Length: 319
Image 1 (tube, one colour):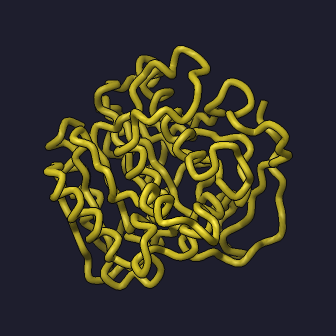
Image 2 (image 1 turned 45 degrees about the horizontal axis):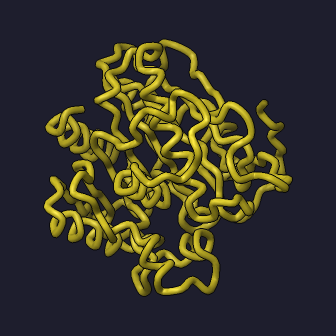
């Protein structure tokens, strides 16, 4: 059962959100968005908790669907359908500094842009460690793994190829995406149904202005505090630094960042790319001169290159 969403007064915008620059147009959708909970009952590890879904507006004068979730009791997927499906799919993981999840209910402009390119896009609303779930810092990973498995389990329904499922993450969602890619076989929960027999590894990965390391001084302090608490041990910091322990089967990974990002240092992307190269993982890095904490779909009246660069990279690796 989906718990009620509780509207609350606007809270200060938190550093580390995955806001992107304004876009000029949002492609129309041929079919309505489907939205559903990713767990058949209560999510794992919530015994004794009284978490309720809460929604805040990200800007007092912004569009109605420009919202974020400071508390998540019911992790969900939005299915943004492609007007002309090409068989590929993308799991879209938004950011929010692990203090909230910056995703609406109607399909983001980025999800719609990739749907217009033929990809069925699945936007993930994931749980947050701050709410006290038993898995702690691994609770977002539980939801990301479950989402990948559900996408593959429903491949026939959504007319996608289960071998052609990518993941793209933004800001703190980039950290979660990197961990999904490198820890896809880590057992974070007990199987709940047949979908959990599906693999959780993405075929290819895009990390955009990502939080990566938990090691100072590069770490994004807000994300680190929300994920690990205020007194994390060196072992815990190392475990949750996404550049560490990349497996030999780490998916091909594209990393992109703006050099003028005032929130998450571009050194995070440089750190991840260096680790990918050291592990001999097919990888690509783009550092744009400008963009702040977010890369726009359009800039100066023209399409920004990053979506095309990711699509090119992803297609070169099987998407």
